[in-house]
Image (cartoon, rainbow, N blue to C red):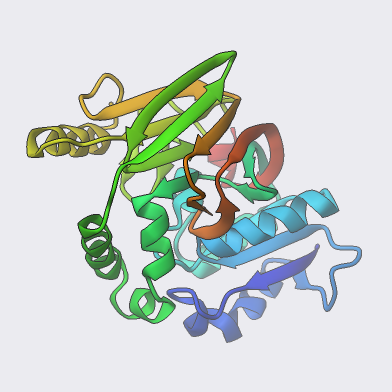
Length: 276
């Protein structure tokens, strides 16, 4: 099997495994191609940002994608219960078992887990690669606290299914998966359910902040004070001024924007027992 390898040496563990990765893939029957022509798959070795870029290549080539998780969050890898060990992740690719999952798109950018406007988008923009490499999740938490200090509510209009909702929010997320952001885990969503879920946070006091945090960590975020949730296959989002969007941590333009889903458009290598 020939693979196009997309490796991010700046990811959390990318530099550590950059030299040994091709050897591990070869041991599992996967040869890394010199160019992008005539390949059987795309291998994404890095974090969720690397995966975002790899999705576009895999869809363009109409081939499956293999994931070697080397980042901080590795949301999709955790969603699919892929091994964090590099050799084991390569073995999953070599085994050849695939699962079809949904992919979302905003402003021409594909993503697997979530796209956000507001606080998390600011976190992604001000957080440095060096901080993430050195401190991992602690860097994310520190940056989040810094971003919340300057958070201001946005006025947004959301159009979906013939409806229009207008509200204020400090954080708006359109998720394609039940797991995103490293800590969020939603009980009634899935990576292949054909739906996008929009979550809007408008916290007015400490009690609502605690309720939202408790709800998302327990996996039951709906009907929580301070949290709006909507489900659809397509959302159009307008704001009074342009706000930055990030898709799985990568820049994805500004609002206004349309988010839509491509149902089971991507094949991903997964362990055989998960595949079944």
